[in-house]
Image 1 (cartoon, rainbow, N blue to C red):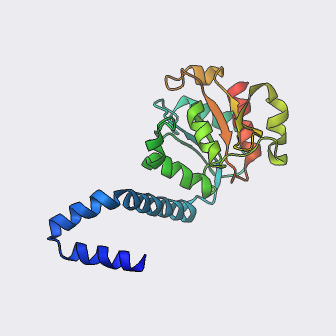
Image 2 (image 1 turned 90 degrees about the horizontal axis):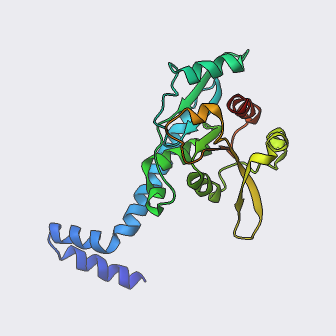
Image 3 (image 1 turned 45 degrees about the horizontal axis):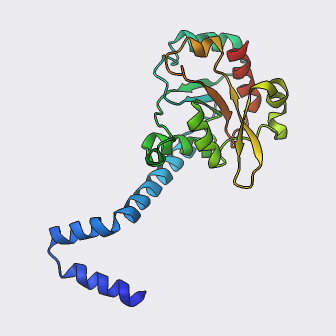
Length: 218
């Protein structure tokens, strides 16, 4: 292996700059892209971890959402009134994430990498998304198994809405809640083909996610 690498190095050194660049890209683009994606994810993760607000009350990421869910929207203000949090802090509805995990290439999508980074940093508490994205994220074990003790109340209250992911070992795990028939979701133009909520495997605010679920399904 060492001799092969040395020979490859000498071969490239003998080429002109343009020819060497074309050669490297032709034969090494897959590992190069892989390294770039890894570095991008690492930077995003570090940024998310270091910059997560200390006073966050709830952070929900809406994937492929083209409707208004910002602080100025009726959707946001109505939830804020419904929740009536006594603690001071911020509620964040982040709709800046667009990908479709039915397409393998979207696993390298920058929005997906951002979503993963925010999940793993404990910034995002839950995702609202289409089923293909739910299953793709569940595959990476980044969503909470709703049979977990932390999600006991969600599991018990919404058993008839649970969506299951089947592991490679054949185990069926409840990973999401079908919220497609929520009046608030139906009024959106983004989720006409179904909508699901999953809880981050890294959150410590599960009870507030349940409150958001109750708001959607009241």
